[in-house]
Image (tube, rainbow, N blue to C red):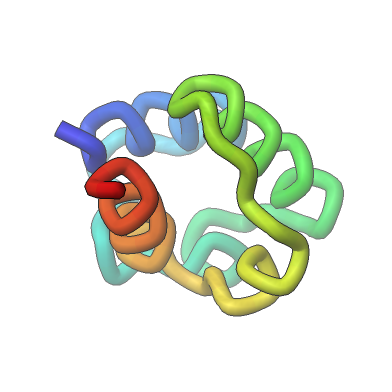
Length: 77
């Protein structure tokens, strides 16, 4: 499942408890990611799912759920 893989990446990258990573969790506010963390997170997700997330899409991603929706839309194609 996409969410499980993303949660695993976030827990590893941001060193947060797994139970804090929900679809409603804000990447910056709830999970404490700064701009560099977001860049690292995007790179890890791109590598794990073998896809590219354009910069303009990164700006629209605010929550874990936003990442899941983006990945699911890209992997359906």
